[in-house]
Image (tube, rainbow over all chains, first blue to last red; front, top):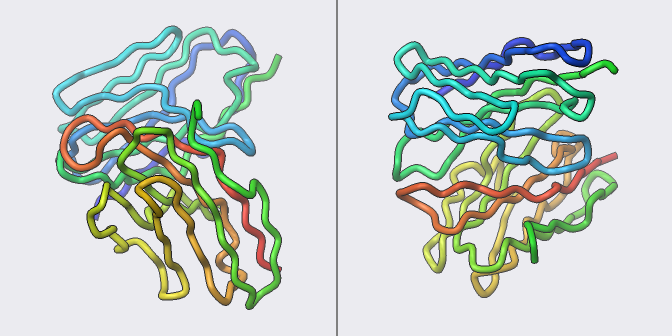
Length: 113
Length: 116
């Protein structure tokens, strides 16, 4: 059974710092991995999706990497801003014909002005 | 609409009562998913609808939970005889297609259910 772990569970950084969020998964046979952002009282917003054949994806100040063989992904946030404060979730999809996503419990990020 | 919508946004109920949660997917999306997010837990898959196919109910935690999707659009998740452990945020998502291929899921804001 696929298990997804995110470390740390919570992180507090001063504004402007670069930071890395970690995600690990136990079964490396994945189809893709997705990073989401969740704001309180709101749904999930997709940030980046990495197919299993890709090594990284970038969007603005965000960069996600994937090392499928070691079962790890990182989300790098450059020059953090208070507006980045949210819970970040990673989720893996097992194979092309599977629609279920397995989620980690998330990392709650606080960026202090 | 522009995104997935859910109603109500918050629901407080007494133990033993039945509740209905509603999801309006993005227009044109054929696949619809329900997830549950309990305090301190990751999102847990509940049920999946794809077009007119029989839904995948493998994630429903008990027979008190059921869901339907009328006309291939709006979905209702029903919890009968609610228990305190049912308290959670219930999230709905939709995607353009289900099954194989790239099918990014777009999530609604969720319904926060509190069972007293």
